[in-house]
Structure formats: C-alpha cells, structure tokens
Length: 174
Image (cartoon, rainbow, N blue to C red; front, side, top):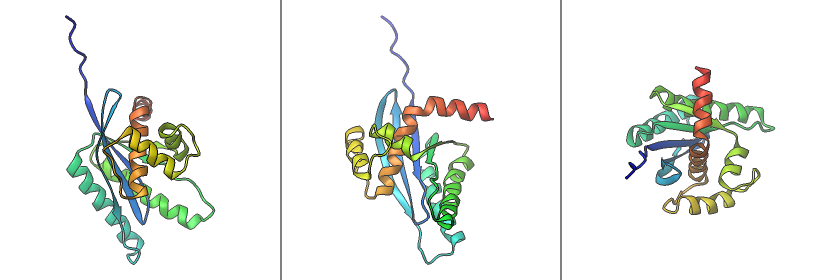
C-alpha cells in the first residue's frame, strides 16, 4: 500500500494597504484546499499626523503577525492615480505593510490589482461585489466586515495560487 502524500499547511497573510484602513486576511493552504482563519482591518485616525498613522499600521499588523504566525505574506501593488500626493501616501502605507512581515523574516510577494481580480473572479476588471461573491464560494466561512478585509483575503488567495512562482522570484532576487 503506497504511503499517503505529505501535506504541509501554509499560513498566508494577505494585506491590502491603505492609509485610512489597511485590510488583512489570513488563510491556510493545504494542497489546493483553502481554509479561512481570520480577517479584519487596521484603522488609523485621520487626525493623527502621517508618521503616527504609519506607526498605527505597523503596530496593528505586528499584532496580527504575532497572533496568527503566517509563514508567507502578500501585498497588493500600488496603482498610480491622478492625485500624486495620495499615491505617495498610499505608497508609504504599502511600505509599512511590507516592512512588518519582512521584519519577522517572512517573504513578501506583490500582486497587481488586476491579477488579484483575475485570479479570484476570472476577470481583471471585476468589481468589489464580484470579489465578495467569489470569496463566499472559495472561503465559505469568511465574513469580512469591510471591503479592505475582503480585498486582503483575495490577495491571500492570489498568493496561494501563485506562490510557487512568487517564491521562485524572491529566491532568485536574493
């Protein structure tokens, strides 16, 4: 009788960076099976100076990292919009979102918004409602309270599907 294949469970943290609200989602992947663990968002007060908001994002993500102990992380790439100042601020929040897992020794993959939508929904220009519907199919126990948490779960799912090639890119870059 052949031995059963060894299945390793991989815990992934998906992060949807934002200055007002940074979404996070944690899933476990075993083979091609996805399991919802938790999701939420780190919210900052708009009255805080930029540096204080960045600290709040870092502290919130550090708590998530400490509580759920992911071994891989994925962050959505910043899209450039018409407001250069807003894009720069989003880039700073994204930098903190990448820094928090990296400081724990966790590799961080990056995915374009269209790649996330195409992976989860099948279309690169899907809307937020379509993402939520597919989350219900792929992670039936998930009930994200915000669009940011839903997007973070979609980013984690994207990494689950593309992690072999993403990890190879990270290894080659070292």
